[in-house]
Structure formats: structure tokens, C-alpha cells
Image 1 (cartoon, rainbow, N blue to C red):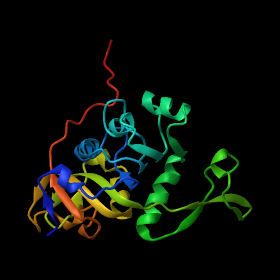
Image 2 (cartoon, helix red, strand yellow):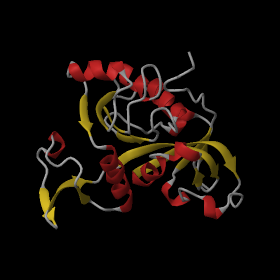
Image 3 (cartoon, rainbow, N blue to C red):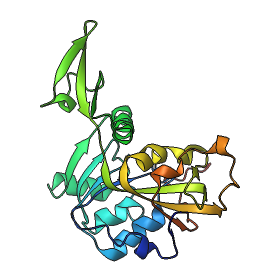
Amino acid sequence: MKPIYTSYLDAVKDIHDGATLMVGGFGLCGIPENLILALVEKKVTDLTVISNNCGVDEWGLGLLLKNKQIKKMIGSYVGENKEFERQVLSAELEVELTPQGTLAEKIRAGGAGIPAFYTPAGVGTPVADGKETRKFNGKEYLLEEALQADFSLIRAWKGDKMGNLIYHKTARNFNPMMAAAGKVTIVEVEHLYETGELDPNEIHTPSIYVQRLIVGKQEKRIERLTVQG
């Protein structure tokens, strides 16, 4: 059995200033919102955050951004956060933008123990600045290095006490690969089951990648509400 926490602050207690974090989610879908709130309360600073995006103003990673707890952001999309834009333009935040497929593969490679790989994405653009290129079969490819993190913060739908995880539909997104690429993976799960109750054929993340569990509900806010006029 993996440690099962009852306090989100206790679950993140050893996340230190200057740590590198992977944070699951796509937009606001599948984000570990309670673990993020615990980091806001903990006031940890100088974080390097690897995530598809940086939440929105006033929610998700946007809360850490607002408090200037993030030093560097590695992601692929930043268009929903005005504070992000302000900090970038005022040189308050270091940003490394990466093509979305490349970001996913960098994380997957990190979890699989693959140090680097070649991809055609980004060749001939600023993404390639300072990076090695090589031709295969007459086509140019860019060398990208894998990503790993001190801690991965993950959201799952179902989990058992061993740490086996199941994600809910599109809320899976970056969570499984980030769970594998973190030295310490902390999971907030909506429903916790006894070991053996989950169908092994439905497991998305095996327990070997999980170090801590905590059970909690989410607000599950909508990133952009569109209604009929």
C-alpha cells in the first residue's frame, strides 16, 4: 500500500523552493487543483513548472503565477492567461514554449529513461535555436532532450490503495506520462478502492510510478463557457 494522506499540505510538505514540477492537465481538465491550492498556501517559490499550459487567471496554475511562485514555465499553450502575458512582457517570468507533440514526447521519454530523440517539429523555427539537427532519409530533424521532474502532481478518477490509477476520458491527457516522469509522484484521486477491486485491464498508470495518494473532490471549473445567445 502507498501512503494515503488526509491533508494536502502534508502531501506537498517536501516540495521545496526551486523544485521542478510536472503538473497534469489540459486547460482546466484533469488538473490536480487541490494540490495546486496547497502549494499556494505553502508559499513555495522559484518553481520550474512543466505543464501544457499555465491555468487561467485566478485558477489552477494561474494562482501560483499570480503569487509569483513560478520562476520558469515549460509548456505549449499560454493563451488563456492575461497575467502570464503581463509577466512575460515585463521579463518577470522565464518561458520555454514547446510544440505540443514534442512536449508530450519529451515527458514520455523522461518517464521511459530515453535521454533524447529526433523530431521534425520546430526545424527552421526559433524552437531549433541552439539545438542539434541531423538529416535522416534526406529530411532534417531536431534533437530534443527528455524532461523529468522532482515532483509530479497528478489527478486521477479512480485509484486503489496500491496506487494503480484510472483516468476519466479526456482528463487523462498529460497525467499518465507525467506520473512516470516524476521522481516523486503525488496523486489526488476522486475515488479510492481496495487493492484488487479495479480491473487490471483498465489501469492506465501502474502503481510502480506512484508514491503518494490523497482523496478529494474537485470544483471542476469550466475554462471558457460558451452558451447560446
